[in-house]
Image: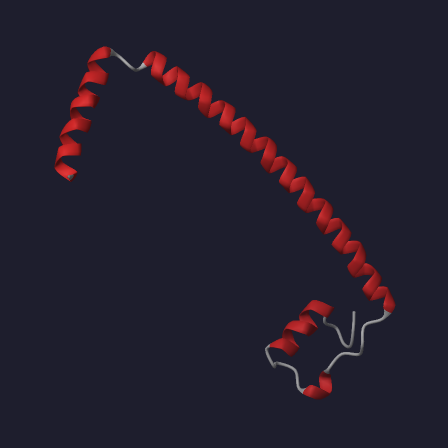
Length: 98
């Protein structure tokens, strides 16, 4: 920790919002702190890649699932009477919105 009992992020936040007086400014960070930041950035980049990969896989799975559901819906629920009713409704609303 830098300065007193605050973490570097808390100290930065206090300085940013003017909570601490200027004489309570923490000392300059040491090289170990900079090294830790580099390690955290590398871990963050890896986490971002992992999240992007998971999102990509999930997107593909949901797309496949939606395609299958759409196919099932048209097969199971679409009857000639229902499609006739739907066509009549669409024609009626199309006229209404013109």
